[in-house]
Length: 151
Length: 159
Image (tube, rainbow over all chains, first blue to last red):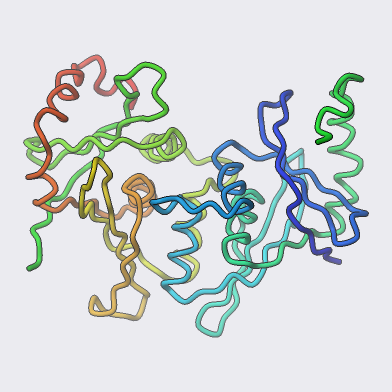
């Protein structure tokens, strides 16, 4: 089963020095945090804020190549979580055929946002995440961190 | 008029001479080593280029690996990348793509930053060119300080 997710925010995680993309489902009952690197975080934040740069950034180039070839991003799916690493697939249609390409979720999301393609998460990942990843995150949290990101 | 293209190879990626700079410099040279083209790139793109030069295969595909995988799976071949222009210290590049069946007549061209174009060329073993015009317009005052820095120690040290 797949659940459609929306990109709700981007946070900085001081413990891992990485950024976290927050995905939520329509009803706000499921939440998935995904750790991403700095360049991918800025690629996602530009798309969130609708910022266009004077020159095409890497994910803009990715989209332009697909547009030029008349390939279309149908959807991206976060498919798996293994050893704290998330896996994603980009689904494309090109010349009457469909293709699935392995990607990091950060690249897949940055591309989906530019292509206005939906982002799905395998329910299996949401379940695994609630145990594996949240434990790791909660372990690191200190009492003073609570409320830190409330704006 | 079709401009003359000069083939370049990537010699290395070096830190910028300015302390705390957010940039890195990719050094390209022609076969005879008479022309050197330094291109300033961001840290992420500099890293992407360095990894390809070192032949590092990361456990998960990085952004430029993904672009290579996307084009390969769709049967698109990157035939070449060309540094086409320089305006106000900004370099422009084009990526030439060909679908498997099509001939050179139907080559697709995509505008790109040279950093992305180079990172992609290195991953697809595609040749990198610069137009003779860009080389002609390279101001010596921009290149000379860099050439001085290219002592044997610097050269290769960070490659």
